Each structure stands twice: as structure tokens, then as C-alpha cells.
Image (cartoon, rainbow, N blue to C red):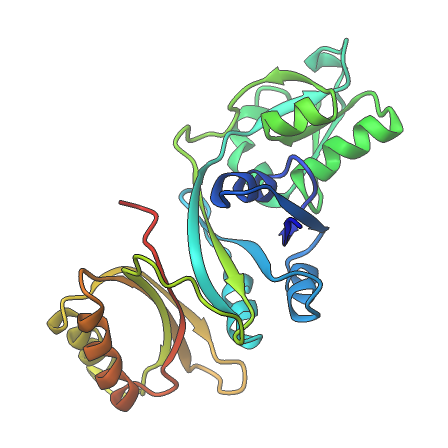
Length: 275
């Protein structure tokens, strides 16, 4: 029986591509149109694993997903970096002059903004998912409507690509994380990266002191992201990714941070995919 994996999006979406590249064996995907419903599928045990985009090299962090992982006590058990190439696709036998509207995910539209300045007659419309638009164009025979999606989506839904790699910055990577419920068994092989969360007091040097502990324990900080603590105005939680050469170095840092960093929490330990 294939492993069930919840993804944000439908067949041919970038999350679907990650599901094919990350797992060694074929998986059964559960299509979810929002990240909230992706997490719901995991919490309700409809699946054992979910895939969530966390940051993009152009657009930055997807902040609500940090909050989803934290508030639902999910654990990150892996990560995957995907080269994102956006393509403009339509029903066959149309030219770009025939296209009146292009629908896609807000992130995709943002990354392709410069391309569409050449075509002021095209209206850009935000939608829930890249591949879902491609699926809708095919299902409803929508002429004059374009989608921005992956080449896989074009193949699956039999659409014609009018322009390849239309994103403004050609090197465009998204980091995805693989998450499980907190009570699930974690993947324990080759762990050399961790995602942690903590708060910092409103005192001079409090954040620096925590970062110094990481440095002294030979942890390499690869990402730091602050999020406001809703219940306490103007106080922030910090989400940090660190890599390390030995698990003993991380254990040492953990034991110290457990004492000195308010709200310290490990969101996951896993293998660093960016080597």
C-alpha cells in the first residue's frame, strides 16, 4: 500500500513534484487547496505525512506556514529544495494575443510580474494553486485564459506552453519541508540539521546571548525568522534553522538553550538537503 501524503495543490503542482522526488517509492497524494486543509488532513490521520513550502529564494518566507507547524505541534522530518520554473500555458492553438486573463497562485504572479509588462492586455488574477488553474482550463475548455504552472501540469492537462521559464529571476528555488504529527516516529538517519523556536526577553543582548550559545556549540545558523506573538504585542518568537557536524554539539546546545531561552522548542531534526 502506497504511503499517503497530503500536498497543497493538485496533480502537477510543485508540491506534487516534491512528493515524487523526495520519497523513494511512489506515494498516494491527497490534494488540498490550502495549507490549512493540508495540515487538517495530517491531524485527522487521513495521511501520515504532509509537504509544505516554507521559503522561496525570491519571495522569502511563507510566514503562515511557520505558525501552522508550530501551533499544531508538527515535527519536521525532512526537507527538499526544488528548482521552480514557471511556464505560461493555454489550451492548444492559441497565441499570446488571444489571452485575456492569466490566473495563478499570488507567489507565481509576483515572480513573473516583469514578463507580463510586455503584454498590458493580459489581466493577472490571483488564484489558490498553479496546477489547479491548469486543470480547470482543461476541464472547462477555457479559451483566452492562461495558467502559470509546471511543465508537468502542462503534460498532465494537455496544455500548450506559450512561454517557458517566465519568472523574473531565473534561479528560483523553493524549500519544502516534510512534516509529521508529533507522536509519529521520526526519520533518524544522517541527522545534521534542526529547526528550533524560542522567544527573547526585552533586554539588551538577550538575542545575542542565545546566538552566542549556538556559535560556541559549533552550530551554523542558516535561517532566522521572527514572528509576532499574538497574545503579547511587540514580543516576538524566533524560528531558527541550524546545521551541525555532530549530534553531540546539538545536544549540548539544546541542554543550554532549554534553560536560558524562553519558550524553547524543537520543531524537528532531519538531514540537511542543501549540501
